[in-house]
Image 1 (tube, rainbow, N blue to C red):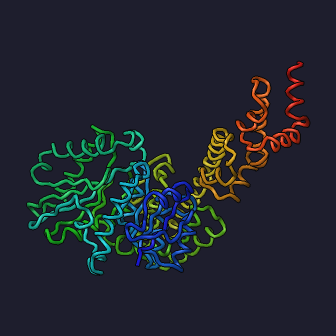
Image 2 (image 1 turned 60 degrees about the vertical axis):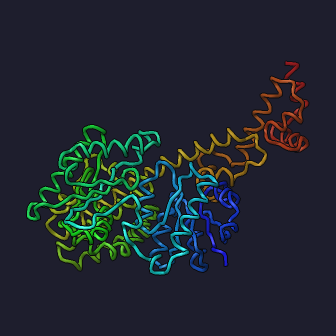
Image 3 (image 1 turned 90 degrees about the vertical axis):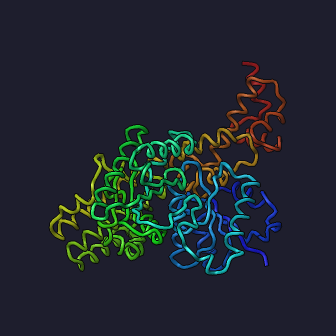
Length: 506
């Protein structure tokens, strides 16, 4: 029986390319369906099962990351292969955390790379027993990591805070320009070279293992060496790097410890850029995280989609829950909520730290709120500010979308196959919403805008060249010269031939 594959990407050309790039049946597979959005894929998977999900990490409305989270929540996660861009390593990291098995860069997508990945997944999963497939061993997932067999170690995972911007800075060549220099600089620190092991799992994501000599001094020593590495990367490479660090553990427990560090990374934004999240300080936060994810999923979705009516309702439910807690528990719950919001920002490649002019240490800020009333007032104002920020940012982006749409139309108006759907797909909107937005921003429909552009270009060609009418018709996007003549006369009030004679006389 053939393995079933579901393709999810908002770009039609990507879906078509993946369908036709290889002979799927040669590898025991068949394309079950393809979907143009996370919502469509979720609906499909609720009623159908597939063996392999290939999804774009970043899509409008529901991202591939959100799709993975929903599938994981309902227990319907297939083997997942994530497609990403060079500037989307934050999304890739989150995808792995949610259970993705591998990823491919869209820019590097070729028949050879796709076949290699398909074969690797087949060897890893479909020829293994159920126990092997479900085993979540950090060392097995990341072949670049060779864990020590004995001894006591502290573990940390270090991540570049603004990887999206660093990708643009290094021109996509993150391995040569960022990853290798980071490791080389860190290994020049005596304590690191003598007592530590560093592994780069992927650009901007480093695993750090530190040999423990004196357990009573461990916390101070570990924090000191992490701060030293952070300072080196900041001073020599202008990189802000955050860390999640464990307590000391025996070698046989390191895979489990690293998994906990990975989960603790969600709290990094609470301390600001280049923060250190220590297990001994956030154990309580971590214990209640899974329940908080379920509790605030709707609230954060309404916030990010700017559904103000539902947002207010979910916010009141949040306050009602907080009122049932003691003050310290309420503080922890607010910190969890902010951490989840920060993760939402990262999924959409937003800069969480840009919302406010001054960087906030949320541990310190919320720690100073003395009463439940103060906490509720602060949180209400905070969430309202976030809503206003997202609304303003969306307005700016939508204006940018119309600019991109106009540019795309200008570049492709000569293509007779250019349609409203083509342009909507290019800018990442559904047709209905794009039609409304385009008409509102330009003052005319897409069809009128395209016709005006084509006929304006036709007038220029008539006035400045000796091209025949059928040649001009083809150059401005009309396959049929009779249709071109009708459209020209309808909009200009004069036939192309008469227009040419009038202009030549003048």
